[in-house]
Image (cartoon, rainbow, N blue to C red):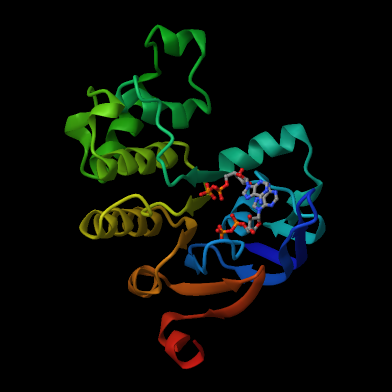
Length: 237
Ligand code: ADP
Ligand code: ADP
C-alpha cells in the first residue's frame, strides 16, 4: 500500500506544487491521475520513487516512510518502483532486447553486459516481456527504428523486466496518436493486472482515464479535487 499523509512539496524556488495530499493506494490498483498541465501530477507520482522529494508530511510504502530514505534504500526503492516516461527514454542506438535487459540490470554499462553476456534466465524474461506487449519480433532491431507506440511498448517491457511492485507512468501516451495511445494503455493495464502491480498513470484527458482507470485522482493547483471510482466522476466534475 502507498499512503500519503499530509504530504506537501515546495520546490526550492518557493513554488508550492503539492498541498496536503492524503491518499491511500491499495496494492493492485490501476490509478489514473488527471489534471491540467502544472496541476502537480508529475510531482505527485515522482514523489513515489523520490525523483522529487516532498518537503512535508509522510509518504509510506508498505508502512515505511520513503521520505526518510538515504542512498542504499533509495536504490532499492527505485528497483521496486519502475517508471515509464512520455518520451520512452530508450537508448536509441541499442537493440530493443538490450534496452529491455537494462531493466533487469538497473543500468546498462556492466562489463558482462557490454560483452553481451546476459544470464540466460534474464534474456528469457526480457523476451517473454517483449512478447507480452506484442513486440518480440523486434528484439534485434535498433530502438530508434521503431515507431513511438512500439518504443513505448518496449519501455513497458523494460519496466516489467525490472520486476517492480509499482509502476509510475508519467504521461505515457502524450506523444502518441489516439489509436496508438489506446493500444499502449490497453497493454499497460493488462500487464499490470497480470502481474498484480500497483500502477499510477498521469493523463491529460479524462475520457482516456475513464476508459482504463480503476480509480481516478483529480489534481488542481497541487490539491486533490477528486478521488473515486470512474462511475462517480461525472457527478462531481
Ligand atoms: P503536471 O505534471 O501536472 O504538469 P508538475 O508536477 O510537472 O505538474 O508541476 C507542478 C508545478 O510545479 C508546475 O507549476 C511546475 O512548473 C512546477 N515545477 C515542477 N518542477 C519544478 C521544479 N523542479 N522547480 C520549480 N517548480 C517546478
Ligand atoms: P515533463 O513534461 O517531463 O513534466 P517539464 O517540462 O514539466 O517536463 O519539466 C522538465 C524539468 O524541468 C523537470 O525536471 C521539472 O522538475 C523541471 N521544471 C518544471 N517546471 C519548472 C519550474 N517552474 N522551475 C524549475 N524547474 C522546473
